Image (cartoon, rainbow, N blue to C red):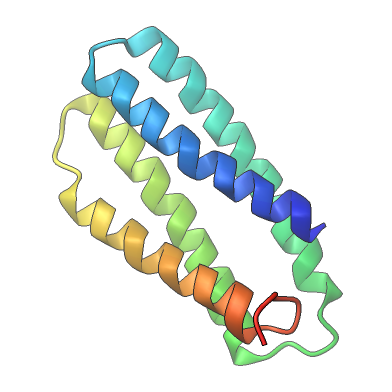
Amino acid sequence: MAHLHITSWVIAFVLLFVVRSFYDSGKAKPGKILHMILRLDYLIILYSGGSLFTDYSNYSGELFLKVLAGLWTIVSIEMITVRTNKGKPTGAWWINFVIAAAIAIILGFGRLPLGILP
């Protein structure tokens, strides 16, 4: 399940930049289609993340912080894409995205037991 989770959020990061580039270049229709695919990817992220959440034998505070950082990342991605489509500034949401994604990745790979780092 970890592979599905990692693959789905990597796809979400790639789709974020593709959707933003379509919206910035004025191609609203392909941007909207990919935005809907990105929203479906959120469901895969939530499903696989929930499955990984239940795989832990003990629930530490760091795990709950990672869940909140993951949800914060998804909200940031959605706000970036929606505000880009509407032509509104997205600078604050990019900062939110970087901070939230960094917290989630550091906790997921480095601190929690199912991560790959020692």
